[in-house]
Image (cartoon, rainbow, N blue to C red):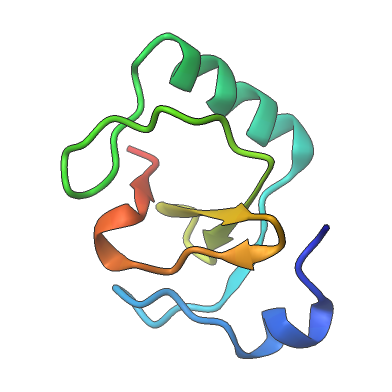
Length: 83
């Protein structure tokens, strides 16, 4: 279930306070490939083990947040750095 446009209007990254937008489906596929290889970590250093169904990304495209069952997981330590 995609995050609604109205909700996206008010959501912000808890770390940078930037607005968030939906991560493109082809990027979700690419990051899921890297998750499968064990190459993706959260900010807290723990590995991302579960693939993303949907995700949000900051305006500067430096932080990804997973969306589980339509609920954005906006915890600072569970952001996924893109660099």
